[in-house]
Image (tube, rainbow, N blue to C red; front, side, top):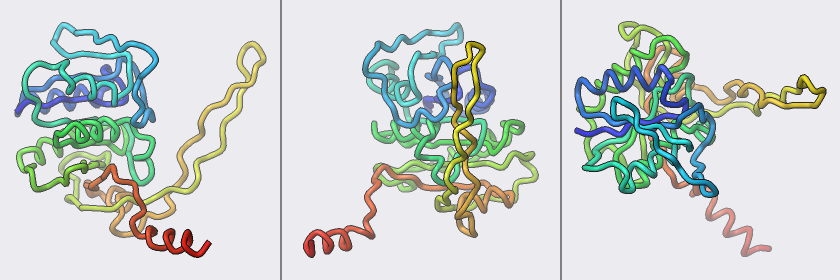
Length: 246
């Protein structure tokens, strides 16, 4: 098996390096990842400047682009030979609920699926036990087959930041959602100009039993199927009725 490994924290992040070390025990792995942290890049592609791949001494690549750029380039003729699976992560921090809208980790996996390959995204709830998340992925990959995922679906994996032996198991979950994000943080730079930082994510609002938030908070690995079809199918008829009435 040949695995394409990417992320949004950048090629030097601990998570991707731990993931690569673990995966290379069971497969051939090529990293194509951003040359710096591109967290929350979502599925953006770089269209107004060229991408410049840099080959590292170990054969991996870093690119001056987004996570989606990395996978898009890798699978559109840049890498020689067949790729069987795309893995994105391990992200330092969970991607739960509506985090997936912004997540570059999830976006890299979605790009892989868009280009026809089975793809998974994996995130750790914290920044300590990356080995736990790596082992979970290595446990799951041999059991992954064509019938697991729909044509445009990925698996979004979130792992509690605890030792592997303390995991309570795996739960298949749906996305929860958060409260509105915190307000912008205003500061003054050394020249007296105002600058702004995006604030922290909102607290979980819908996090009951069956959600990804609930599973991870209770010591379980969360597996959530994610799809690119964002149509609110349950509202189609209601919207149709409204158009016809008005």
